[in-house]
Image 1 (spheres, rainbow, N blue to C red):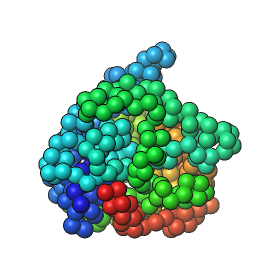
Image 2: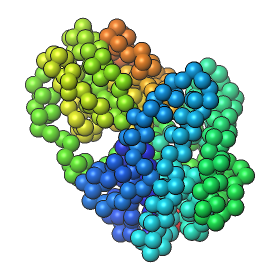
Image 3: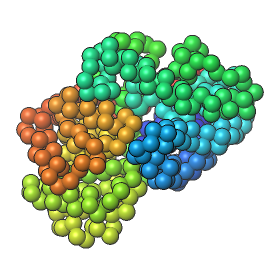
Image 4: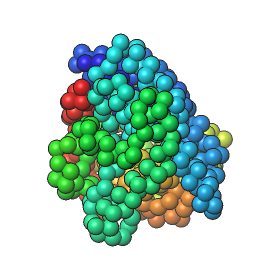
Length: 419
């Protein structure tokens, strides 16, 4: 098969799909990969020979349009910010996806992540090929996932339906502009209905252990495979398992891991001070992964019990930690669960507060907005999740997850069905 992976968004949006692309290539398929321009080096280290598609995701997440607009008291500014995030780089993504298909000399299926589905589906329709999407969160309406903290299944299902309707209202004009550029007629119903009607493959790339009953509610059309992670040899190729980190871990008690991935930390010094203080109060060490943030200036003042590092291999590092403080992205959530340790989620937006709510509901974590994380709140949250009962529940829950290699193989099986 000839498969084009067109992947936009942050590293958390792209890396899980790269695990599937590598598996499919090892099966002998002809796979072409496109990623956000700032993530091309990531794909290159994995030997995928990626090309840039879409626009720089790091620039978007740190832009004033997003940062100020999302916090604005003016509803119009907030709507503009969310629309900008939803449709960011769609023209470049369309052009890049078409170029990937040309690179293969034709394509059997186009594969995207959770972002960019509107564009990927339109290109697949124009080319008359299959389409598959890797979902890192259950975006279709259901009565299981708590989109808000209160309300039963009927309320949650209705809210999920309303959220999809809102996204359609925000993106409809932009989507139809892309469809027109491809010579397609305008869409008159939202994407999820069209994907259902065409029998597109929607791989649920997360483990349903936090949402029991959802696989039965959705049936076989949306296969659940588990959280996706790179194989050991591929993680080694990234070079993020450093001797320095390993030596520090060996030199003392298991630490608390702190990392916010691609999320922009507004005040790195204040956050690091909160982590340092809360961990000092509890007699804990902290390993802080800077992600896309600059903690260097504040690292020296954090104390000997805090170590600030760059990206780390979650699979190797997290099992050597006592708990994790993170933003609640699907990838980090899955890695923390597999490591069998509890979480403190300091969420920003999108699906992050919902993952935090799911972890709390399962009794393996707690959750609060990242803006409320200070020394006092973090100390209380860590003390809560380090209670022996919570630690035991996290160990038991994590032991029941689908192994990463099983999840990746199942996702690749599903993608093969799309062609």
